[in-house]
Image (tube, rainbow over all chains, first blue to last red):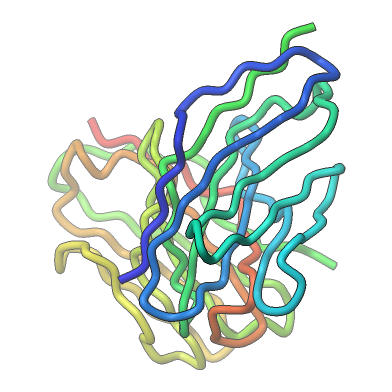
Length: 112
Length: 114
């Protein structure tokens, strides 16, 4: 069965600094990978997804992620953090059906 | 267009009671999934329904059940509530079933069991 590990439950960066949130997956078949963001007391919003094709995926709000099969990774990055990026970020994997398996989440704090 | 809607927003129940949570998918979406998100954790998959049939079930006890109606809305039922059932219950919809399709999440129902 597919699974996801997010390294680092909390990440703190300064405004304008690089954001790097780490995600490693386990899947018996080529995976579909997703990053979602959750703001307090809200549902999850899709940032980006990888299905097939180009391994560098661009999403909303300036985020991007790179699928690296050899490293079973799908890390999320943003060149310059904004205060509004402070939220909980979840990496997720699905296989043939879309019952997604989520990581435990990484809380991003952005310091002024 | 309206997104995924869930009702109620908040709910407080007592141990041993039963609860029904409701979800309306995005118009045209035929797949609905339910997730439980305990505070401080990622969402855990409970059920997936497509065209009114159960297509997937997570590792949850039989106290949890669900169904999907002809209009594709869905209900999640939990019997004999335990304190550990306190969580945010998220409903998600997608146009069809398949791993490549992202799921669109509703705002959730916050269930508190006392």
